[in-house]
Length: 377
Image (cartoon, rainbow, N blue to C red; front, side, top):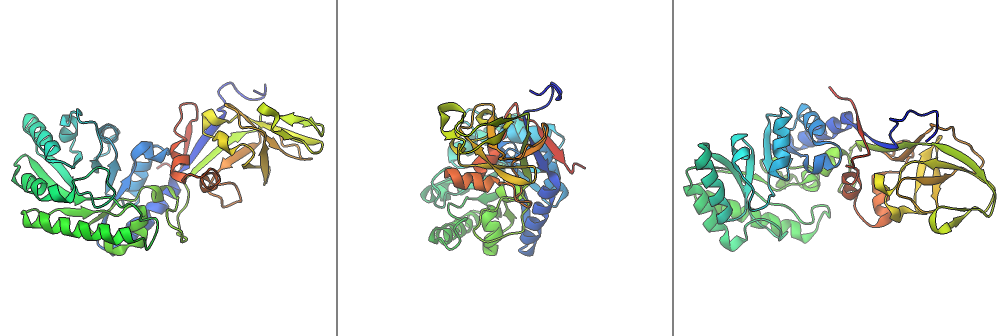
């Protein structure tokens, strides 16, 4: 590290723009409200790598009235942060103790009669009713009750005095492909499941729309939408939407050097300078969230322009070819950001290595990469 930098200087950091989160949630909540639906902001996986608690608070400020968390532990962390809004959790190990969730008024997902019985027994033990959302598997074939068992589940739920059935719900497999025939098939199965629930004496809310469906299928918004990736400004649809990416991944130049033509860079010497050139060393590597598979396939934003990363990405560092320019030690390096100024984006990284931008941003939750927030209220 340069002697001009303090020992506490982070090698890399994630900057999260909560103003962008608010903008995105306002847009999504307004779309939902057009159909009479409320908005659940999904903040699972530590807010898709952005930080669950700050994002949750920003989303609630911007019009969301529910929060979604994958596990009961994630939901209880929101409660521990003082968040009192409705929180829904949907995936845990069979042996999980539901008692803290029931006591803390967390809504729980139910896919089987056995799970319903465990939750009801726990509710009797703690002396409080459990709020549940019955999940119907409409075609994703993950969690959820299969259609042939659905009548039995809703009948049992309707007869259970220690359980309040708040909603029925499901999840779409191909909503990010508008026009895919599975969307309408799943929607029809969901409507049938609702009719069965009503015939059993239930009057539940309905929710099936993820980010893509919330934006593109007004008919599937029902009573509640569950946007996830879109609240972070990443667009799941092929058409343009007014979403603002909230995450910037940045580092700093810690050293520059001039090398001669013919000198090679990094492990394996996979890149050799075709001319005399200046290199900038950036202390961010695959331990910080830069995929090693981007070696030789990525650029960064440095000193007002894109510049190629040359040689292999290392565990702790990468090397940028600056040509005849010599950036200052301490100059900011944007590895990815919103893209408004021409910097690389998380979507570009994902496209280059054949994955999705969800994986890129959630992969930024790393102990040695601190998060800094803009726009906290």
